[in-house]
Image (tube, rainbow, N blue to C red; front, side, top):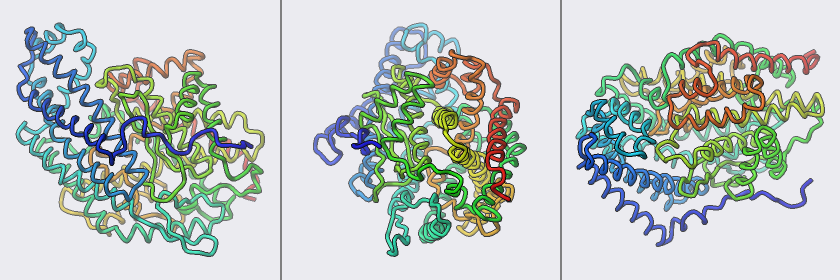
Length: 607
């Protein structure tokens, strides 16, 4: 056992910028605002796209300054967001988040001016512009993507007005949810006393079912207290989007999220089709786990429960330092570069993992492109599940690390491919743990964790997608009240879980507690998780085809995410066609094998 903590539990933010409450930070923010507004004004006067020397020079100058602005914007947004997440009740941090959001309209103005100018240019004009400057040729993908994105823009005056109104409109509803959810306190019984915890501290991983059950109902009661206000928020976020889509003449509410993920509809359809046909195999796992726990069927709060201690002599808790070492070691076995990167991040204070009250729920990885670093936010709960979260977020950070020297415009990648990097890191950890497991009980524990993840990605997130899809269809006809939102959620859960939970074991108010429904800047935030999970499983399963070349191929894929469409990024580096169910079935074969392993190792546990 380690005698002293080697890896910090709290992050270092002071090396990035002055503290947000200081005059020095105010100076940084004011200078950023001045540069941003000056560039927005300059972008209003952009010359037409052409090969004229003056036009090439002005376009190169404006885009280089825009790149610098985007880099600093991400730095500042990440910095304030980190402080706000670590101290959810801090009003000053919340005010700074709101202030930064008011600077989004001038940035949108720049993007709008660029996109409309590129949209109106002919192919010959664009080629002439690119021919005139080497750096412009380097960011060619960004310029072509900007032309494509213009299809999702209103006429310029309306677009600029919509961006202004969004600050106190759609994005204000998202910020309201952040404040409400950050302030929620759950009253739970602990050692005979009622204590208040933040929602991120309330877990459903206790070996005692009564504790899981009480935590679930206590959390549900706390969320129910804000359900009506959350219903207002999610209705107005969706309503604002649907109004915009109607004015744009889009096919439906999936057009924009598909474009945002650089994804073809055929790919999404192929993925969900394969999932729907193959996921019933998970019922075998769920039913076996229920019997091992002495239940007829699992409830919502049982899906993450540990197996009975009689099946595994391993300790039920995992120290932070031990988890860090395991992540570093397993990452290093896959790729020395990945392992060394994880060590740098963990030793360098890039991670906020302390289990304390006052933090926001969930976890995230955010980038600081100027420093070429990331920061990770999570709450470590001394569990293998938390260790997987750590690996997941480090996967995100490694992705940013691979792209760190590219132009900022080519460091942006769609969310579905971002989730590939993170879930791939989890797969590396899980498979290595399974390989070195010393006992049947330990292997069972690892497989249980893997299959609980499969339930999350193939059932839980599918439920979110089905719910959100149907909610948007109903929202087009008018506001959907809280009671109906709960009905839609229950229907989606029953369908996507294949009726696999106990009759009284569902979570109809899940729409209240899941922050992903309230992210105003990213519609349909959820399906990229399933995409990334299955893509990572397929890549891991195919790693044997490439042998020692695979880590380099994988790194090439991460690089390609910044300057390719999703399907092209995968096809050009690994040769797979994502529009065909064949690839997704290959991924789901891995899930099948894990279920069979679990059933074999636990044979007799249900007798």
